[in-house]
Image (cartoon, rainbow, N blue to C red; front, side, top):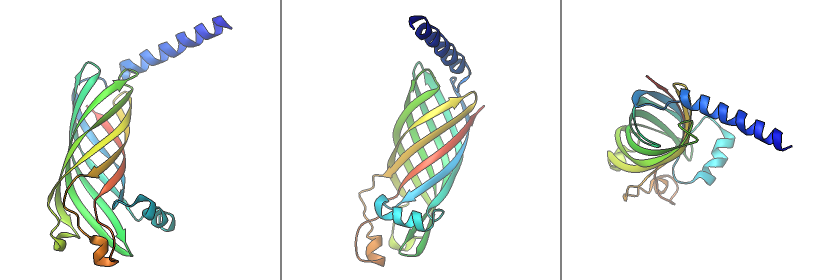
Length: 192
């Protein structure tokens, strides 16, 4: 039994180190894109909408990123075009914006698995809320986990706005609550 454990540990170590060598482990730049699910601060209320029409609040993002490795730590600035879709009481709202997150991460298990987080600046290009005097510049934060294989990366993130301005968007439609974007994104990246 002891021999089996040793052989298993050696095989896992070999797999880990061979994957580590081929992962997105060097400084460079690349392209990214993915899908996002947007909520207006009420995921549990929105869960009912998702079940009734699963594609309703889905959007997408595409962009560029840089990655600077410093030992097990990395810095990853990004610039992405993001389209957010929201439905509030049968009214479809669309937002287009530029997102500029500055993520700091830690490579765990070599560069194969990473945890990251950091601030994000948002510039609204077009917004169905513009008549409600919604600020064009907003700050937020993102955090997530990533997997890297050769030059391909896959990550899942959570993002939320930090703006102090609260628009009573529900008040416009129903008379309750406030409005802040939050989203979960699934992204794929290719590093050159």
